[in-house]
Length: 150
Image 1 (cartoon, rainbow, N blue to C red):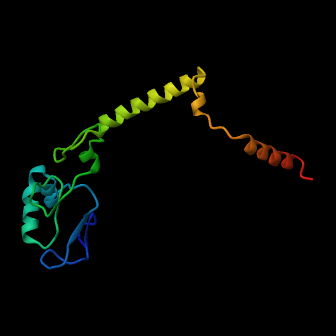
Image 2 (cartoon, rainbow, N blue to C red):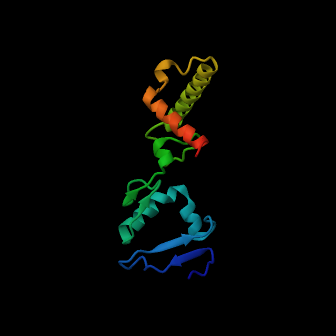
């Protein structure tokens, strides 16, 4: 256990062993090494050091290509966010614009449907599903049995 109660070393090995090592930060970095690690310019060089000198599998999020894996949030990749995009992200599609376009189409379609129903334009005869006389007679027989169970 760390002397600092805000940092917990998880008991899964150490950096120099062949096992994995993990550190859980319980608060945003503020002092010492934590402050160094919080500097944007330190990300790539520290990631490169850890990747080259430890058995840990490193995951990059703004650390360039020095890590073993790369990670981006799907909202960044798909472009669903309409606000700020962090400098490490890359938008591969513009789903936000497409979703807005689809929402506009939804509203137009629902308004057109309501207008057709109010104007008695919908439903038209081709939208009706009817039954034959024999089926209707059978239906009436069942209804009559329900109202006169004897």
